[in-house]
Length: 85
Image 1 (cartoon, rainbow, N blue to C red):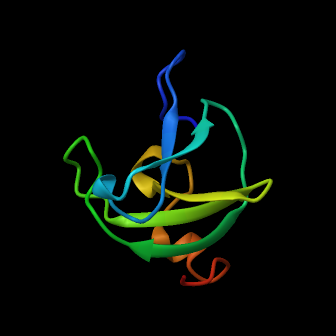
Image 2: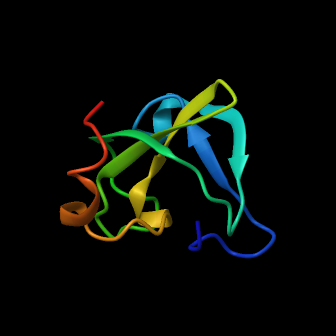
């Protein structure tokens, strides 16, 4: 992940929306995680219109993060390799 400001974190959510609540898992700039699956949901919190969300599973602590804050490339690049949730 590269779009997270140094010293800050990206919170994981229980669903593909900011209103679904945050899990305990935090992701920091530069961490690499496997994308379990993707879906659509709320637009990114900064108003850029990113509606893709990925489920990440880290040691059994799964949750969703908005794609806008990840370095994944375009949907055409990752959709053939990441299943829909």
